[in-house]
Length: 90
Image 1: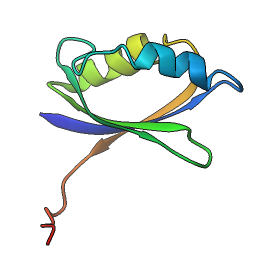
Image 2: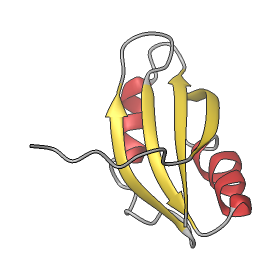
Image 3: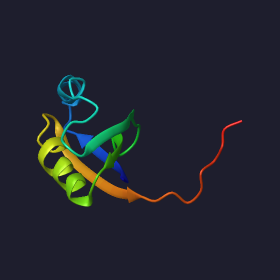
Image 4: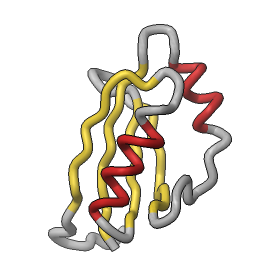
């Protein structure tokens, strides 16, 4: 299983349009891709997703064919994540 950080911007004034579509997505928006968590951000990027995929190809297809096709999405940046150390919460 591979994990990715997906950052993305929405078009000006289209954040609500994106949210309306995104809120209907299942946890597995396409075969082999699972959304672990979603975040609203402040700064250059508007939103972040942490996804798990069964392959690199699934991550590429998800971002290119599902996320970028969602109304309001303007730009994306995807980075694979590699665990350096698991930290325990007290």
